[in-house]
Amino acid sequence: MRLSWHRHKVTSSGQVKHGPHFWGDGTTQRAMLHYAGQWVVIGIEPDNPTAPAMVYEWNDTAQTGRLLLEKLPAVIEARHADPASKLRAKDEKRRAAATAQAEVIPELDTWVAAERARILQEMGLPVPDRPAPKVTKLTTGLPFSAAEARHKPAKMSQSERYFAMLEEERTASGGNR
Image (tube, rainbow, N blue to C red; front, side, top):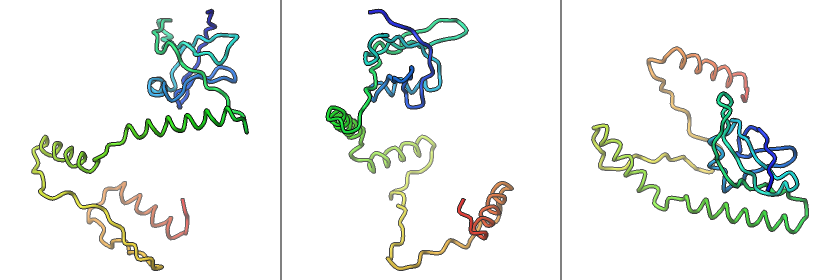
């Protein structure tokens, strides 16, 4: 197997582009995102753009590199109304859903409370007996909403006063930016 070597930057999505072709998918994205915006050298088969690429990190000053990935899979182009492309998309969607499900913490509230207690203990602060209050929103279904708090802090920094002034001007002018 003879490879053709090219120097390219890793995209913000963790892929490498050469001509009209891309390399890198969900299985290699985490490793490649560490090098987003940096130069790498990829080795590709000139006659087969769907073959996996070999990726080296590249150091310009030393003119050397080290192996990052031996096989960076090619992104296969999808065509509109193509049954094979639809099947690949369904498989990728299932794989992504399974990966996301594996990352879910089943008892998130319990875990957050334990981490909060651990951090407070490390800081030497007392751990409260009751959990932190949850934020609630008044939902009445009526055409009114709760008014903003009228109390403003007595001492505001200069930047806080500036941003408050800008916000008041924006709301007074009816602007939405």
